[in-house]
Length: 368
Image 1 (tube, helix red, strand yellow):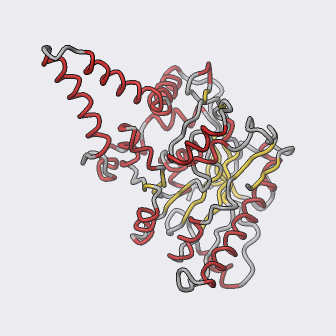
Image 2 (cartoon, rainbow, N blue to C red):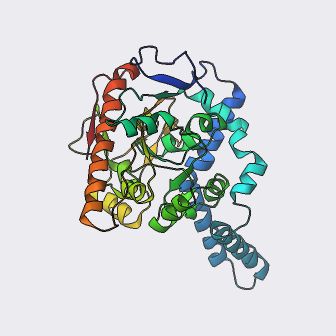
C-alpha cells in the first residue's frame, strides 16, 4: 500500500495516515486540459448527446422518403447498431479492459493534475473488543474482500469514479467492482468502459452474485436520490452536506449476510464539482421512480466540465459484521440495524475530525 508523509492538507488530525497524495498542478498543460475537457464532454455530456443522436437518426429515418431506400437503411442501421452496442457485446469485459490497460491510461494522470487527490486512513479508534481489534489490524482493503461505501454520490458520482478508475487509486482502495445504476446501460460508451473495470449492476441479484464470487465492491449508498439532496433544494443550507442513509440499509444487509466488512469513506469536495438547477419536486420523484437522473447540471462555462476541486477521501475504521442470524429473522434485522448505526456513527466521526483540515470547519453533515 502506498504511504506518504506529505499532505495536501498539512493540518490533518493526529493518528491519520496519508495513503496517497497527488497535489494537482497549478499550471495545467494543454494536453491535460484537452483530455479533461474532451472526456467531460464525451462521458459526462453523454446524458445529452446520446439521446440527441438517437433522436436525430430517428427523425432522419422517418423524414426520408420511402423511395430513398439506401438512406433509410443507413439511418436504421445506425439506430439498430447503437441499440445493439447498448445491450450486448463481447468487447465490454474485464478481460478486454486489462488488455487495453484502461486503468493506466494517460487520461487519469491528466485528471489527477486537474484535481488535488488525497486518500487518508483514519483508524485511530478501533472497535471495542479484542477480536474486532485483531481483525481490524489484519485487514487490508487492497487485498481483502470488502464493501466500500463511498459518500456522497454527488451530481455525477466522481467520488466513486476516481476511487475505481485510475491505477494510482487502486493501490490504496484495491481493484474493487463499482456498483452502478442500471440506467448506465442506456449510454453505450459509458457502459462499455464500466464493463472494462467489472462494474456491477445496482440490482440485488447482481450485487449478491458479486459478493458470493468473493469480489470487493464499491458503491454510493445514497444513489440517484442523493443527487437532488442539498442546496439549492428548499429547506437546505449551502453550508451543509447531506447523505441519504436513514433508509439505506441494503448494502449493510448484504454485508451482514455474506460476512463482509464495510469500509466507510467520505469524499470531501465531491459535491462541489458541478452545480445544478432546482427543478420542480415532481421531476425528482419521477426520476427516482424511473431510477434515472433527470437533472439540469453544469460546470465551467455552463458546460458539463467540472470545476477544479480538491478531493479528500477519508477511510474510516472497517466495520466487521457479526455472524449472521437466519436471513429474515428478527435477530438478523437487529444485526443489520446495529451495524447500520455503527456505520452512521463512524461516518460522522471521520467527517467531523477532518472537516477542519479540508477548510470546511463551518459545515455540518446531515444524515437524512
